[in-house]
Length: 226
Ligand code: SAH
Figure: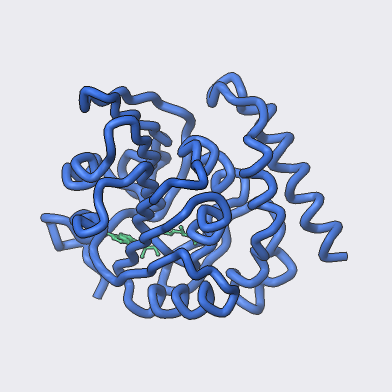
């Protein structure tokens, strides 16, 4: 039963990838990414009363007003990062820890920042229990990034921001890739891929419309959760 649900989730991701190929430029995701989607138990990252929906292709609430993204979007963002086994990746917005676990299957080291302490603590606990020893969860505001471990091969922001935090751009390696939903909260945003070339120049492409919870904190602290 569970295996069937996982298989169906993978088929749905493959179908959506084909359907959105005109927008994303990729009709199929890297087999390594699909394998990570198969291996990571999404049912461990959802609330107990939503277990029956764990493998459906939709976002789900995780408490504290936050959500775990839909599997297709997780796969797409992971694929856009083009993760390599030697990479160190920074994630902003740990949430449940699911996206971090997917990346942990694919790269050497993940640093992930979560602004809500209770979510950070829960995710750190869960990732440890599941055996992911290459993920470091930190409580903090992602606008500052993680300067002590920079620069990063890839940066993924999983909360919507109106502008790319300059410190995150600084902390991206030449040749690195950053994926983020850009736009106003409560409206649909654009998933954006930023590639930093070897000279440090940025190349930005719009991928497709998405809907994420807002990135809080930042220089304007008024939206910081209490
Ligand atoms: N990647 C997560 C889903 C993210 S939901 C997963 O796989 O489950 C977005 C998360 O970003 C929320 O948990 C929210 O609290 C967090 N967040 C919002 N603003 C942030 C900021 N400035 N710094 C770090 N985390 C932030």
